[in-house]
Image (cartoon, rainbow, N blue to C red; front, side, top):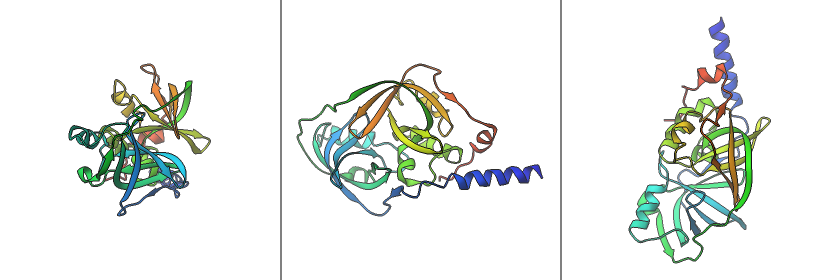
Amino acid sequence: MSALILLLVIAVVFVTNQVGYADSKFEFGTLTEVKGTLIKEPAWGVKTKLNGESKTVILVGFGKFGAQETIEGFIEQGKLKAGDEVTLRGTLFYFQGKYGMELTEVENSYISSSVGNNAEVQSKDLGEVMLEGEIVDSKCFFGVMNPATHAVHRSCAIRCISGGITPFFAVKNGNEFTDYYIIENAFEEWKDELLSYVGLPTKVMAKAKQYGDWKAIELMNQNMLASEEDELSTLMKSITICD
């Protein structure tokens, strides 16, 4: 009987975690050309205009890989560099006004480029912050999967971040995610520790910056990640819905 009750609780949590993500979108099967300024900070992306608004479209690679290898391949071939005006083609995904693009065709994602003069991205220092929320991977959270959070997605998100996909800290206000920070130094000394907290309720102390329509954080001290994992999360963290 206790096992049946536990399974029912897991089912309820799983269904509850589906609610609130219907607005996210991954335009599977549709390729879109995005034209704008190639930026490297706080993550590889294209600064452009979408629907009349200035947006930075975060780039990710095909599958569970980041965009870095593909972009650096273009740089080595002399096709582009940070600050250039570029046109790249891929699959858009988006959620709550935040945009990303998968370089679905890999080396064929490059369309054109011209020399630009805006290599440095302007940022505004927001000071030190204490944030509560969850570490997620940008590709799944902002469109590829519903849901893309909590322990049911933990193993998939770990693989995506391990493959170089930009991780974010999704800030929670009550039951809703309301703010998002790119983790700038995720692949430096923090990677191993970061992965151990993916998909779990977490607190972080960090230095924050504003880059246009994105915020970013730099994690500050070792052992500053404080998980609030409960017994149900422990039980569920091995469950995955991602192939």
